[in-house]
Amino acid sequence: MASGDAELRFWSGIAPAEGGYPGFNPRTETKDGIVGHYDIAVPMRDGKKIYVDVFRPEAPGRYPALIAWSPYGKHGRTKYAWFPRCGVADADLSENTIFEGPDPKYWCQNGYAVINVDSRGAWNSEGDLTFMTEQEGQDGYDLIEWAAAQDWSNGKLALVGVSYLAWSQWRIASTNPPHLAAINPWEGVSDFYRELAYHGGVPETFFVPGLKTFMSFTTTRVEDIAELVAEHTLFDDYWLSKNADLSQIQVPAFVVASWSDQGLHTRGTLEGFRRISSPDKWLLVHGRKKWQFFYEHVEMQKHFFDKFLRGMDTEVDYWPKVSVEVRDRYYWGTFRGENEWPLARTKYTELFLNPSDKTMDWAPVAEQGQVRYRVDDIADKSQNAQFTVVFQEPIELTGYMKLKLWVQADGSDDMDLFVALEKVDRSGNVVHFPFFNCWDDGPTALGWLRASHRELDDVRSTPYQPFHPHTREVKLRESEIVPVEIEIWPSSTRFDAGEALRVVVQGSDIYNYPNQWPTNAHERTVNRGQHVIYAGGKYDSHLLVPVIPAT
Image 1 (cartoon, helix red, strand yellow):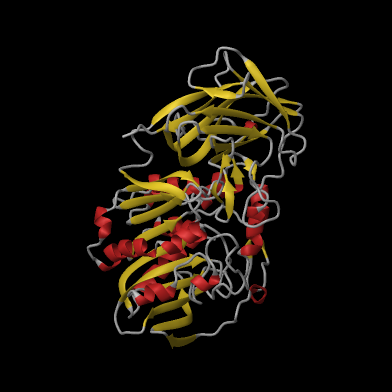
Image 2 (image 1 turned 180 degrees about the vertical axis):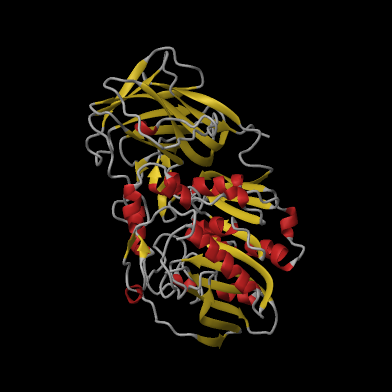
């Protein structure tokens, strides 16, 4: 275990053969103008060996290389087909494309090498398999410097890929390998407590436990992520050890995020872009399905890599620093260039909750009232509080939102609050958006908070983005009414006159797909009895929205 890593717990993992591993077979094969070198041993600084597959053009030369780093298996998708409804099929990609990684066929045909990596301990690689540790960063550094010294390399390396392949980019790039020339994090968590395991302090109970089997194929032993997540319920050294020091990242970066990965990558990718120190960085935010968008935009990736790995003049010189898709409905929106994120011209505006008619008003509500709903049955989705505003003229909401509520737990000393924002059309129907990569009926945005985690970090919080330290619990006293500030993950949506924004608050997941992968769930709540929301009068419960003035 490298210095700086928290104490870990391990389990024996799953035999590689059960994951479709074809077996250790070092060889070189040439096919369709591509040379494939399989099961190359790469020594790490401590003497352990990790194994990689290298694909390069058949023509002699020195090539820049793209690195796909993950525990998923460099031997390809023999165990995992692409999930249904995601917009990508196995037939769309060549046989050596790993899960969430670049297609070697495309890149080799365009003058690049591709290195698929089995990270330390994964499959046949030596050592213990851990996730997002300092050790993984060091190993990535060592691999990059090894690759730069190969006779087929031009000495320029980049990291590329989606999800875990983006998470690992934050960690590796923060070590600043001398020959790392660029990164392309495509939708990746950067705060593993807040964005993956404990949304608002509420434990995630489906996606995280599923990772234990999804990325635990080994001949050694594996970090017991499910056990450790259950053990570390508050933000502590374990969670701190997972998060890369983003401020150390200096390398050019093309960061891609989406509004549609609420509950997984949306927040972390945008925070990554904001916090890295790279002088040359670009952000693209879309509202679509991430894998499909990744493989449909290889030309954009090529322009970026051509500039920083081959020294070419490309259209990157004319890219806006930030490009966002303003969504109207499912797969319908407009991309627009911006200078920064969040947008400097944002007018943060309060919409006050009116409990008497379940609306939201631009002006404070004079009459005090309350709304109640039951929380004992998480399967009963009819029990919630809803507040709606109908817009009288077109409006764009792009950026961060915050829901401030005055709440009481009637029958408990704590409460888990689940929030969804929904766009409603003139006929009263919910306008759906892509969600969690594979679903077609998602919300505009989501938020969560466990009331005992309501304390704020006054230094890191902003008026539009509360930051909760999650370092201790502060339970509710009987009949106590307290203010809570709930972070709503970023989004961008356009509303026409007559369309509405609705806030839904309840005691369980508002959007989920039981036992269907991939999705997340929060089935271990602290809820009992009733939730009470107070608004109006002295209770300034409101939704803070990011209004973008018309130009």
